[in-house]
View 1 (spheres, rainbow, N blue to C red):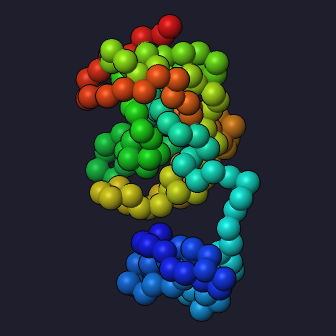
View 2: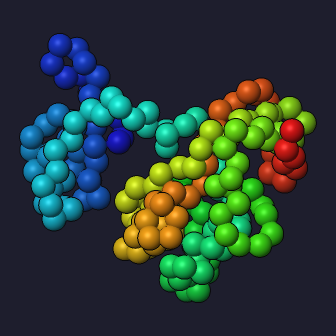
Length: 177
């Protein structure tokens, strides 16, 4: 989405930009056709009231242990680097030793980060096709979502709610409460 326009009745409608630079209001049938042609399958853009579009929760966390596990299962990025954490659009990357998905067992726990911030982990995050799409320097993949579906119930990372707000900085320590 690159902006908004006013649709019928003064309703705010997202504006979608395709890779070739064409822009369409999300409710424009010409845009649906253009997106369908680009993706090679029929697509209709409609509002989705059932899902809050900030990745299921207000704060998302992934771990370096989980990234190593995904890399071991699906293979490295082009050039041999581990799976790029940017693919998962997480708010926080927690550095943990080992491999596996330790965050899968965090639901209900409270995490202090830095001196002030307290988060309550709600549940694992269900992932979508976005993790396989090109992200900044990471090229398109076609295996990450399938790998997570086969090995981790299509989840990676967790979402949390803020119990106490504050300022975070890179390198802050995280501790369980």
